[in-house]
Length: 428
Ligand code: AMP
Ligand code: GLY
Image (cartoon, rainbow, N blue to C red; front, side, top):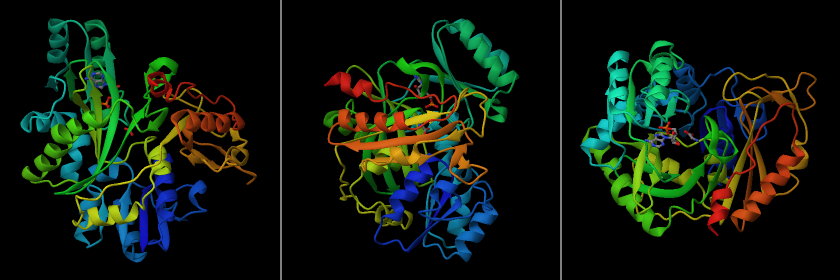
């Protein structure tokens, strides 16, 4: 089988790494991919993830038996619809279904309609109305740009003054471009965050696993929201009983609700959750693709072949009795550029990559690197640079290995959190 993966980041590196191990797969192609993926896949740097025409052409000319779409933007733009119309099997939702992530107001209205637990909210497209609302309401609130903002369009506001600043940044100054034309203002949920992953063929679903992400830039969950500074799986807050609630209250009604609303959901449903002190789950967000960096530990932890699941989902023949199998624990520590999530420099030489992977429990996934000019190695080219990922018999073992590997890697101005998975350990 030939599989085409769309994307170029750490998540796609992890997907390519996993897919390439499948005995069913003869060849992996990736568009555009990255230099670090070239050892595993045929990269097509000339094909951007946003160039739907070129991707459809590559899928046809390369005779791909399955296309796996990494990022949300091409999904929201209708890549899956285009491929399906050409008779190509694709793992990823239609543009209509991708609104679950692409529009916060769509997702909130969907959850209200299908009685899926989430924070109470109001949607606004007028700045003055939004401003009067936050001042009237007082207290804390969470403000979200309606559209896609690479996971950064969320402001946690302690006061109406904070909220006012965030609203002006999003709606007037357009910090997130058109994504901020309208906003959702919602209650601030308390509890512990975790995410949960299930694969659906539009009707049935198979569960993957839970993970926990670290979205803030700095240790102790301080600093700005980022795309994710690290992740681990499993998430101890999602014990058996909580998982049952997540399946019954969220995953099942979401898959059934999307089908009932006329946009059956095909792909991976990534549910961002807040688990309250009673163990009750509330949806913080839906994403319509694998998480980045959660995919890195998920792929390293998964003991099954992922490809038959992706193919069955894409072809509408998923067996809901399928149980997936997982190793004990895995963790990913993201090494980011100085300044991320705001402006950052590029072109800093990276050393120590080979030494980091001497331990065969460790895999370094590349998120933002490129070959250095003299061809001797890699240099930085993105905000998130590397996802240093390790598995272990315990979270502690996985964590020790990941940080030992991080210690071996250097680039000027590198920043990473020291407390990835610390919360899981504090529970033991
Ligand atoms: P989102 O892009 O919607 O996932 O939001 C990014 C992050 O903001 C989440 O992972 C949470 O940490 C936080 N967040 C979003 N909505 C809420 C909420 N209603 N209550 C508390 N935290 C939230
Ligand atoms: N790590 C969060 C995300 O992929 O949206």
